[in-house]
Amino acid sequence: MKSEKSEQDILSAKLDKALREARDKTERAARSTTKAFQVYEKELWAAAEACEYASLMYLLTYNLEGTNTPPPGKVEELDVSKALSQATLTLERILSDRQGQGPILEGYKLLRRDADLLRSSYLSMTRPKQRS
Image (cartoon, rainbow, N blue to C red; front, side, top):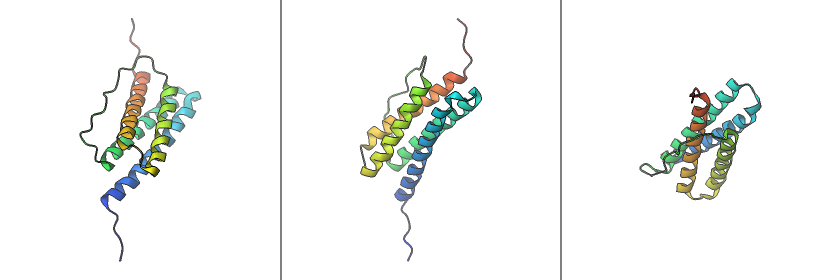
């Protein structure tokens, strides 16, 4: 008799995959800082989108709908490489915490913060500079 995976098991497996993919994409974007601007821009966008998806899977897996997270702050001059490093460390931490079932809500808040930060970084890179 085949045992069926529960919905929770499926979500958990998808979350693990999303977290690993987001980590890989943030690492790839961090390594691409010395490449052509278009390549770097594309890698940063991919990392931001992967973090967004991972945060969605995190929310669904742990049933965190309705959880209040701090709104993204306004980003002026942003150190994009620092944002990528921070996001990579957060993703590593969440992946290792999932093995021991670390603090779930704290992990989600960190993941949301970094997803917002990467998106803001991407937008600040791609928006035309306004003249003063």
